[in-house]
Length: 209
Image (tube, rainbow, N blue to C red; front, side, top):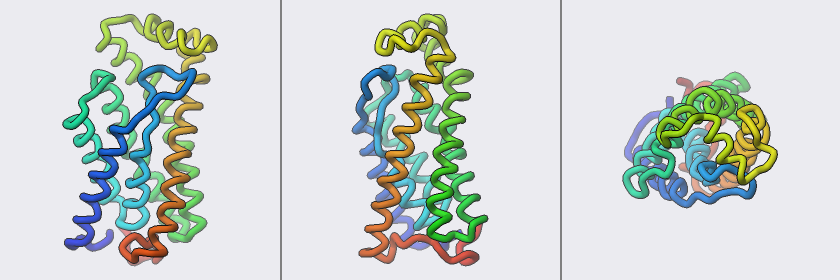
C-alpha cells in the first residue's frame, strides 16, 4: 500500500471534499425514476484509486457520503446513500484486483474500469430488486408494486420489477458509471502530466496491498 504521509492525507481529504460537493450537484435524466440521480462524485475516487491507492479511494467514497448527508440531507430516506455505501467495496476491490493482476499497466487501468462498470451494474440490479426498492417502499409506506407503478409514470415501458431493472436500473447505471469512469480516466491523464502527486501507480510491486 502506498506509504501514508502528510501529502497523501491532504490529497485524500481534498478529493473527499470535492467528491462530497459533486455528489450534492445531482440531476435527473429523462424517462428515469425521480430517485435516480446523475452526479460525478466517482471522478475524485478514480483519481484517488489510481494515484493514491485503494485505502485512499475508500476513504474518499465514505467521506463523500458523510459530507452529502450532513450538508444536503437525503431525498431517498437514506436508501440511496445505503446503496452507495454497499457499492463501495464492489467499486474498489474488483477494480484494484484486476489492476494488480495486470501488473498496473496503462492497459490494466482501462480493463479494470470496464470490469468495474459491469460488476457495479450487475450489483445495482440485485441491490435494487432485493434491497433498495423494498427499503424505499417501506420508507414511503407503500407496497413494492405501487412504487413500481409510481416510477412507471415517467416511463411507460416500466410495468413491473423486471421492466424496471431492464429499462431503468441497467441503462441508468451504465450511463452514470461510464460517464464517471471516462471523465475520471482522462482527467487523471491530464493531472498526471502536470502534477507528480497524481501520477498513475504503474510500478508492479512497489505499492501492493
